[in-house]
Image (cartoon, rainbow, N blue to C red; front, top):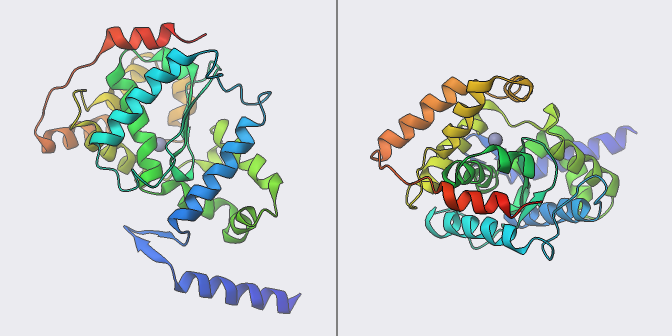
Length: 266
Ligand SMILES: [Zn+2]
């Protein structure tokens, strides 16, 4: 028992000794590990349509064309670090939930409830860019490491622990508090969301529109969301600060085209 513990400690020490510090976040995983881990969780989600009713691309090709067009615009102009490295697959889950989530390695999921709740492309792309920032700034792996521990994640990469993959997928999809990002990560994702969208034709304050709309209604979703996230007023203010610092370029909202996207959904 003791021997195992000591060996574990040595192992952790060795691994941590090789870690890189990235803006205060310790991440011992390689970029390739992010990709592998994200693929494992993606496979788990796609293989379980009962729990994750991912919209079938063959049945709803138009919806995916819209989704990918918006993704490509962010990737082409946003200046993301892992633009050519991560997978950046985008999926729609057909459920009336106000949520989106990001996996390590670039894959992201958007609920139809969230898509239909928003009014224009600028807002949706703001949310998408926010999720992309969690991937590209590698918040996702850092967070998973903190919650599940290094060895558990390594065991997934070695194919030894499929039950944890299912647990991680469920926690992410349900937006469970255990896997919430830190406030710092949320603020950083908002900041990069503005930076990624700014060079496009779209209004780069889109992610703030989402908070503003939620703030007007203050419904049960609002309570659930903001009990675990930084307060919306702070986030809106900071988003406007980043936009001001970049030069206050007014972009377009593209509400008609967004309507086409919504109409292409079930
Ligand atoms: Zn976030």
